[in-house]
Image (cartoon, rainbow, N blue to C red; front, side, top):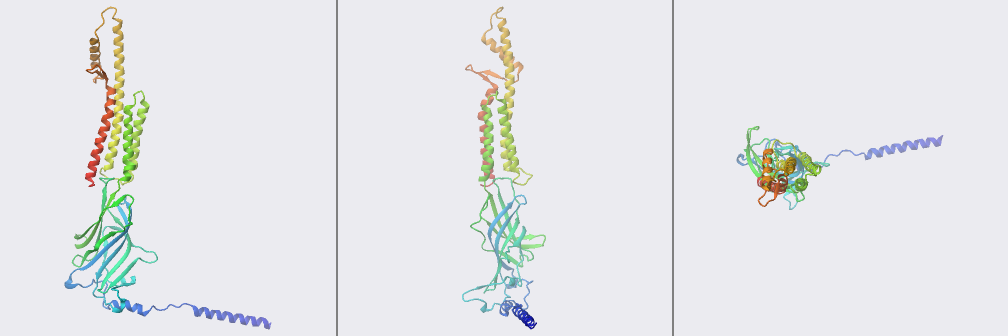
Length: 430
């Protein structure tokens, strides 16, 4: 019993010591370094109001420098007429109310990077993208933003953002179109008498690694303007950058123009097929026409339905008209061939009847026989189905139409192609 009692006492003592150790090592929140807090408090006076813009000389508008570096552009959506852009924006302005102690800067430095929480206590330019749908600051474990303070009391705010920007697109010259998409930066509250925006340095730069799959980015155009805004009843300073996206034609040359041209050329082979091969000739032309219709239907799904005619519509219409005309030519030739066979049957019967009468009357002259045939042909047909040339050769109408079509159809399509590409390139400004 005494042995068990000793064990119990030792066990209680051990538990008591473990509790004391755990309590002793428990972390207790400690106040932040007062020196770190005092440094930021020294910058902002007690009477500082972040809702009021910084004072300027003689009440001039405060100047805000703005710059943008475009990191990536993707998701150019023709259905919603917008595109997504990742960028790093910078804003700079001076705030004379800030007090800067000399000990804040390290030796040789003229600027110091402050925590992003410091920016929340300062006056901020209320800039926004006028034609944006969504604008967000990029985050991972924290927001990608920074505040830099210079010795001359200039504040620079930088942030990594992504935005979805609206763009009014036009497709008259599709697929050789160039979409002009402006991005407008403006103050929401301060008119041009209170705030003046200006581009800083080059204004907008593009990342060298930036490439688009279906577009080429043309050189940017920057503007600094002042526009009257009816909703806010005042004139506001604006910064505008125009992005121009030139569609790459190579994809459409391979996927659209080359196949459609080959289908049209294939339809011309029917002019070399004899009329005895009616199933082959009809199948060839109908297949070509259905191929173009199917191709056109698939191409129309790549862009939204619009109320006007696009350049691609004209090209596909020209191709389908060419194939349809080849089909119409076959119908005409087939009808003339049938009339020609009927006429030849009549002439054969007349010649046979004349041969039966040669025993009772002298035979007619060859000239009389031809004149009789020609007169009979003119009476029964509105179209001359065959004729005799000066050198004595007999020309048959349906065969001549096929022969001429072998030259006329390619010639017309060639002229159409030259006119189409000339007008399209001039109209699209290539």
